[in-house]
Length: 449
Image 1 (cartoon, helix red, strand yellow):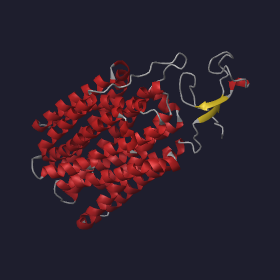
Image 2: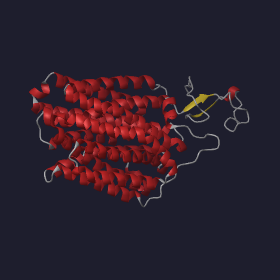
Image 3: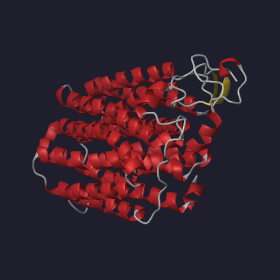
Image 4: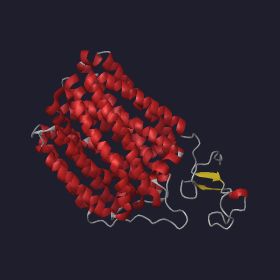
């Protein structure tokens, strides 16, 4: 897995991602504690609203990021977004009103909505070989796990020495280091459209490709499970179990530990089993874990046996993290497999926007239900959403999903470059099939070859 770090450009990008996400993880812990200070028992509602604003920025601005990635040099785009995020993080320790929290979160996440899809679309251009890209996806998953493992552990250590407001300074330092790592790089520009293929929108690619429609359902399953962890952990740990602030970090670290463990195993497992065979059972695990949590909360077992409930919560968060990693790593591979290089920025931006639209639904659902009806109601609703999404993904994703599909082009003239060498009636032929200007619809009956 580490062999891809020999590439200098990717090494800098990976380190930039890692330090920025470490800083973001510090902000996640600090924001949860800030919400608890400002709103007490209603912290879940405050945090759910703040994270919903984050997702609103992602949904609204990610398509703009796809357009910017084709017009603005990638390095300028990435560094500029990091500097905006740095400024917002430095301002967060000084807020005293909820509206100020919401405004700064919106600004910070608007910059992230520009940064992340541009970053994601750059990696397959830097590492064009599929094996290298799979390793990069696994490493990227490890970097994301720093947000929920190393960052909370670091936050727990810092909270023993300084007030939580200082964690936002660590966030700003992460964004500054990220900008400094990207600044010296020469990143590949986006490819222009080919003379015949042209471009298709990212949304068209997602909705016209069966495996990507299934991916959107899996994104909803991940969002429902992740919202339970990120929104309601502080309520469960501080309010439900009465544990100290540092244990919020430990619970989030358990989630990250599960994700990191899975990420280390995934490159080998994906090579043997394939994406569908891992992603769909992982979504089922998400639903099962939330169902167990619901049962424990609804029965009152967690409140009656807090000493036993604490390790049980850590174990559930560990399972949720591992299953989430399996789904998300497969998702990156599916995106890369389903579009030409020139269409990747638009596809990553569209997926970023639509997948975070799922979080826009689940964050407030988790926060407001926990605040008004209790954590058990929140867990039950999110378990139901996760199960429905997992079943939808299984139905949408064809069991037989080869790269090459046999299809026809009766609409093309015989001399068209795409079919000039195809003598078969209707110009039937096979090749790796992707939605583009010449292939507007998925073949209804793909061959078994």
